[in-house]
Amino acid sequence: MKNHEKAEAFRKRIALSGQRVAEINALLKKEQFDESDKLRATILFQKAAYLSGCEEQYKQLITHVRLMGNEALIAKTKGFASKLNC
Image (cartoon, rainbow, N blue to C red; front, side):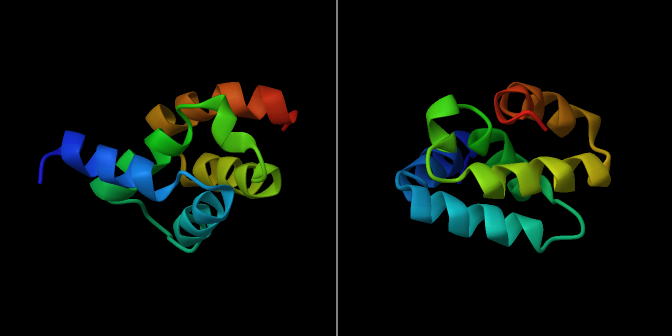
Protein backbone atom coordinates (compact mmCIF):
# COMPACT_ATOMS: atom_id res chain seq x y z
CA MET A 1 0.00 0.00 0.00
CA LYS A 2 1.34 3.43 -0.95
CA ASN A 3 1.76 6.22 1.60
CA HIS A 4 -1.14 8.11 0.07
CA GLU A 5 -3.45 5.12 0.52
CA LYS A 6 -2.20 4.57 4.08
CA ALA A 7 -2.79 8.23 4.84
CA GLU A 8 -6.35 8.14 3.51
CA ALA A 9 -7.14 5.00 5.51
CA PHE A 10 -5.73 6.62 8.64
CA ARG A 11 -7.73 9.83 8.12
CA LYS A 12 -10.90 7.72 8.02
CA ARG A 13 -9.87 5.96 11.24
CA ILE A 14 -9.47 9.24 13.13
CA ALA A 15 -12.74 10.89 12.14
CA LEU A 16 -14.06 10.86 15.72
CA SER A 17 -12.28 12.27 18.76
CA GLY A 18 -12.33 8.91 20.56
CA GLN A 19 -10.54 7.35 17.61
CA ARG A 20 -7.91 10.12 17.67
CA VAL A 21 -7.38 9.60 21.40
CA ALA A 22 -6.80 5.88 20.82
CA GLU A 23 -4.27 6.57 18.03
CA ILE A 24 -2.46 9.20 20.09
CA ASN A 25 -2.29 6.84 23.07
CA ALA A 26 -0.80 4.15 20.83
CA LEU A 27 1.89 6.59 19.68
CA LEU A 28 2.60 7.64 23.27
CA LYS A 29 3.55 4.04 24.11
CA LYS A 30 6.27 3.95 21.46
CA GLU A 31 9.89 4.64 22.33
CA GLN A 32 10.78 5.15 18.66
CA PHE A 33 8.68 6.00 15.64
CA ASP A 34 9.02 3.98 12.46
CA GLU A 35 8.03 5.51 9.11
CA SER A 36 4.39 4.47 9.56
CA ASP A 37 4.27 6.12 12.99
CA LYS A 38 5.78 9.30 11.58
CA LEU A 39 3.14 9.35 8.86
CA ARG A 40 0.34 8.93 11.43
CA ALA A 41 1.81 11.64 13.67
CA THR A 42 2.12 14.00 10.71
CA ILE A 43 -1.53 13.45 9.80
CA LEU A 44 -2.64 14.00 13.39
CA PHE A 45 -1.01 17.44 13.26
CA GLN A 46 -2.54 18.49 9.91
CA LYS A 47 -5.91 19.91 10.96
CA ALA A 48 -6.68 22.16 13.90
CA ALA A 49 -10.16 20.60 13.99
CA TYR A 50 -8.51 17.38 15.21
CA LEU A 51 -7.84 19.10 18.55
CA SER A 52 -11.51 19.04 19.49
CA GLY A 53 -12.00 16.65 22.38
CA CYS A 54 -8.34 15.60 22.42
CA GLU A 55 -6.52 18.59 23.87
CA GLU A 56 -4.81 16.79 26.77
CA GLN A 57 -3.71 13.90 24.57
CA TYR A 58 -2.26 16.32 22.04
CA LYS A 59 -0.27 18.06 24.79
CA GLN A 60 1.14 14.68 25.80
CA LEU A 61 1.94 13.81 22.18
CA ILE A 62 3.69 17.14 21.62
CA THR A 63 5.84 16.53 24.71
CA HIS A 64 6.56 12.98 23.55
CA VAL A 65 7.59 14.12 20.06
CA ARG A 66 9.86 16.77 21.55
CA LEU A 67 11.54 14.19 23.79
CA MET A 68 12.13 11.92 20.81
CA GLY A 69 14.03 14.74 19.12
CA ASN A 70 12.84 14.28 15.53
CA GLU A 71 13.18 17.83 14.21
CA ALA A 72 10.82 17.29 11.28
CA LEU A 73 8.02 16.08 13.55
CA ILE A 74 8.73 18.78 16.13
CA ALA A 75 8.24 21.39 13.39
CA LYS A 76 4.84 19.88 12.56
CA THR A 77 3.71 20.25 16.20
CA LYS A 78 4.37 23.98 16.46
CA GLY A 79 0.95 25.17 15.28
CA PHE A 80 -0.84 22.88 17.70
CA ALA A 81 1.57 23.75 20.51
CA SER A 82 0.80 27.44 20.12
CA LYS A 83 -2.96 26.76 20.15
CA LEU A 84 -2.55 24.68 23.32
CA ASN A 85 -0.06 27.05 24.95
CA CYS A 86 2.49 24.31 25.55
